[in-house]
Length: 340
Ligand code: AMP
Ligand code: MG
Image (cartoon, rainbow, N blue to C red):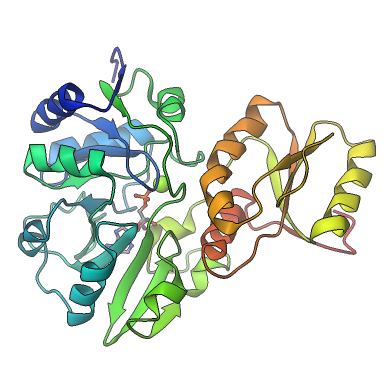
């Protein structure tokens, strides 16, 4: 792992370079509509092992396999539930990951030792073109160092992966900004393991939806969770993050009071006008999703020690924002009336 990392814009030549490296079992960071992905040939065990090394990712945390057409799905899985066909028709390409029983083609490192595999077809034209050019599916977790906020620009990827991978394809800012929704099937119902760009409300138009309790609750130590990624601290800046259960004026007053006796404090308000310690993280859940990870990196650049974040909405895209914030905060929520 000692590369002279190239960062080049998405285009015909960079797609060709990316495909060539991926065919040779190397890693390439690629843009998608959710966050940047660190891609490898999903069917090549040695290539996939490099992802875990480059990210410092725990080996039991399985990867999402990205495809560019429905034709690519059947060889990877043993069964495709009818509900999955309906959801694929409606939401692929897009930020929806579905979990299937895996076929023998998927190496065990890719699935984190599980007998299931997570598959998604991205909407991003850049991602799909690279997959098409390769002709094989790509395993691609977020292209950040494990534990850090996911990258939503090529520059973020460079900060984390410089020297660790040969190539980063710059496709501009990610449109969604948080990772895909991850679901599994339980009979006719689906179970949301991780909320994302395709919301529970959108899915419930097609089938019965349950939200896993790990989405908003901290798993007990050693508790077996359905989605291994949910048990790790995640998305964290160096600063200590707190979600503050207050809105508008009450939030602003609380943060202003604390900023009088604490320096290096930054407050992220939902639609606040930026002044003093306040930064705006967006007035709608969609904007918040787009901005969140970049802001979590920015607070570190600004040298923050404490970051107070206004409680987001918990429906629609808000649930994905809340889920990421809870993990960034290590589940620390300040209720009004608490001194800390
Ligand atoms: P990332 O690729 O970093 O966005 O994370 C992928 C997420 O999908 C993690 O939370 C994983 O735990 C989850 N995931 C991937 N494969 C499976 C699977 N086979 N079963 C359950 N969860 C999975
Ligand atoms: Mg990740």
